[in-house]
Amino acid sequence: MKNVYEVLKERGFIKQVTHEGLEELLGREKITFYIGFDPTADSLHVGHYVALMAMAHMQRAGHRPIVLLGGGTGMIGDPSGKTDMRKMMTTETIDHNVAQFRKQIGKFLDFSEGKAIMVDNGDWLRNLNYIEFLREVGAHFSVNRMLTAECYKRRMEKGLTFLEFNYMLMQAYDFLELNRRYGCKLEMGGDDQWSNILAGADLIRRKEQKEAYGLTCTLLLKSDGKKMGKTENGALWLDPEKTSPYEFYQYWRNVADADVERCLSLLTFLPMEEVHRLGSLKDQEINEAKCVLAYELTKQIHGEEAARAAEAASRQLFEGAGEGGNVPTTQVTKEQFGENAKLIDMMMLCGLTKSRGEGRRLIAGGGVLVNGEKIADEFYTLSDADIQDGAVLIKKGKKVFHRVQIG
Image (cartoon, rainbow, N blue to C red):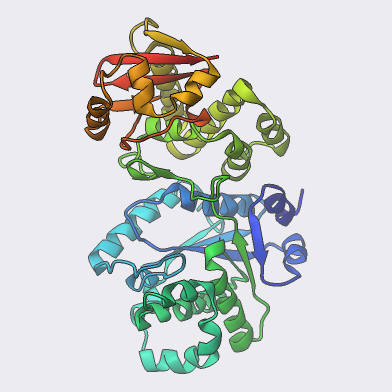
């Protein structure tokens, strides 16, 4: 069996590692590792899924994951990647969100006897004696060094509160506590957690004189560098009540061509030979890869039945639009499509609206869908990512469909 470090590296997970020796350790023994999830909402979103997939690969290789729910750190709020202070949540909200996370994560990892652990850092953080904590932990942190950390530098411009300044100490203490309780040797997390992870590994070395490692995973970004998983309605949630399986499927069916191979590698368990084959497809053939990505990911999160239903609904909507295939179609060349890339212009070209003003009102009122996805931007620009099987399906209101065939 491959060393799981090689698997994570090959699939594109690994961004940074604290120091040499981790690959050898993972090949030599089965270790306990952890990833923390702060309950900032009542559902996980697709950005969390990279971490869950990394945990799953580690568990499949025989290592034991600890899922750390942030019932304690959630009381403060992580400043990493934020230009403004996070909104303070009540204890009741945090506890509710933790309970929701607990239910969701339980579906993605094997929690049978000895296979995985799920704990809440609120169990030890909420009742800390602050003076004792400062003496035991705070004495090992240099303020000068902390201020050079990326998670704090971004916040310095608008004002870093002392509340947030404590976050790094809390997360470092989590690693120390898990090391003491469960022999945890590795903390993993998104690359925006690098400074916090370094702090935890260093604290264990100072306090316990033991080796501790940190590894960050790549963030889920589009090829243009922007975060993936943002929709017109907000985040792409894993809760089917917040993002339906159909909406979830459609999101992945419509990803940009340049992002397909990376998403298949990070977010599915498909063998890398198949990932490379699908990722190498060009032009209209890349739609096969997008369908595989959408189906596999929907199946993993919502189950096979939901994935099949979403796939069938997508095909019916696009191929037949619920009317037996009798959908009015306008044939345009690639040049015409490019010239009329604004959704409003394309609607006018197809006779779906008589004026740009009317078109903008329709879009603003939520009355226009592209390939089943509601468009809220009045100035939305159609792109190659919107082309499915050589066409774009526009829906106006509840019953008016129009297919734009390109080529």
